[in-house]
Amino acid sequence: MEVKSATFVISNSDWRKCPSDNRPEYAFIGRSNVGKSSLINMLTNNKSLAKTSVRPGKTQLINHFLINHEWYLVDLPGYGYAKIAKTARAEWMKMIKDYFANREQLVSTFVLIDSRIPPQKIDLDFISYLGVNSIPLSIVFTKVDKLKQRETALNVNAFKKALAEEWEELPPIFITSSVSGTGRSKILNYIEQTNNSIKE
Ligand code: GDP
Image 1: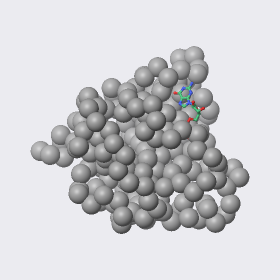
Image 2: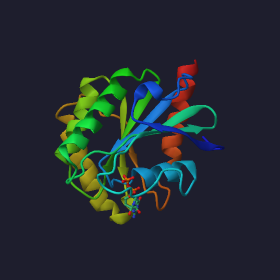
Image 3: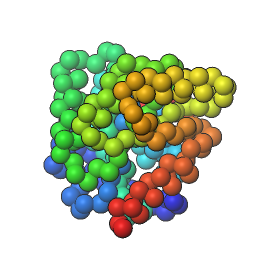
Image 4: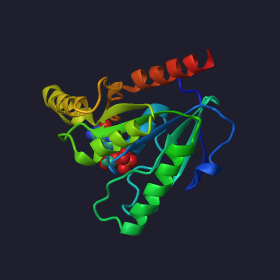
């Protein structure tokens, strides 16, 4: 897929106020600092569509971007700030749970995982949550330019092993770098194919 246009549409904390035109949407989520904004900007060929490195603890919102007038890329607020207040964490939880429970246009969710570190409980727990709620997902390993291929493979394989303890079949897995553009066409082609299969 070629990204011909990518425009910001709306930010809000309530799934009910998200766009209601029934275009398919794809959500992106991960631990804060995982590289989500950078990945969104890389995918859309736009240096500043998603804002990188937002101040930790700041209230974050559900952001909708319209791609090619055809589908929405949804930037969901990240999880796992060590210093976040309990109330902010509870607000995040409610916003996310409501979104996943109600957003019928959601086709698939990309869960971003930092390729530089071994499997983390917080990520595995979040993936389990999506699985339990039957939300289709893919895994996106980020920042692979930072490690040697062999080291990335070790972390990716450890993650797959951890997933295999709960999942019979592994979700699609993408290896990416926002610096080099690795994985860009694979993710965009996956979205294009999925959009085509919905239309059929
Ligand atoms: P977010 O909090 O998940 O949106 O993460 P950001 O996109 O703001 O990225 C967090 C930090 O990681 C920033 O300093 C980015 O420049 C850096 N970063 C993000 N993606 C990559 C990547 O693919 N390669 C490298 N080397 N750095 C990255």
